[in-house]
Image (tube, rainbow, N blue to C red; front, side, top):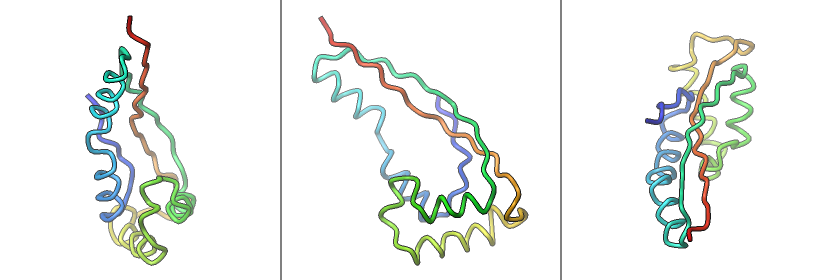
Length: 111
């Protein structure tokens, strides 16, 4: 079972990111199997931390490809939402511990 990531995203970014990821594992496996691959999927948990100021820079830089859909105003409004909510108790130099789970697809040509 995939751990729910604790990535501190604002509401709009969560919605865009979730919409992009829905069915990713199942769809990717289905396409690979249609091409006659045997598929194995591994889940790798990745733990890291970044400062709050670095996190905001990463959001502004749209480090998640799904954030491309958001314009600068929407990103800044989202950062304001984080400042008022999830990250309000942190200073800019404080670390944010984050984890996410990556899917690793191993596809071998079937016989």
